Length: 163
Image 1: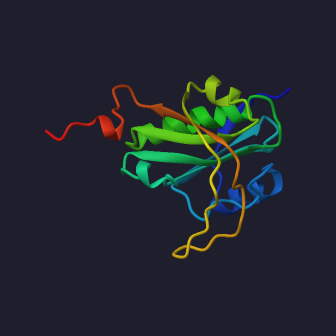
Image 2: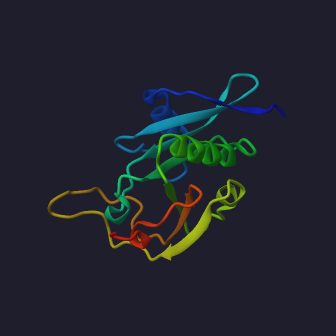
């Protein structure tokens, strides 16, 4: 088995990889802040992570980013490597917190291996559609688990004082 290494990926490559390999979100997110890939020693791209603005308004504090997609072709340890790499990159860019979600039935093993912490279990959403922002039904009605990783000493936005 070849070893893995991080590789830069352009936006179009990340989107195409997501369309080809993601199990339940073949449509990539509409935008991003940064992305990265992981390749084997044969220079074959085996995984991509896309990081963007948090979807939840409560996390849009300017210091938090969200892993909107990680997708691999099943290559062992690729997902864990991606989660660890995007956290390091986010912290190097000045972000203090990175969040992501798993769906019911996903173990979170890659997140635990990358030192993310399980924060909360979220009930299924009734849907993303609203009069102000029409949405096509997608992954609604699926319970999710919220995970995070923070820089050392980073405070949760609700824990910050107003002094």
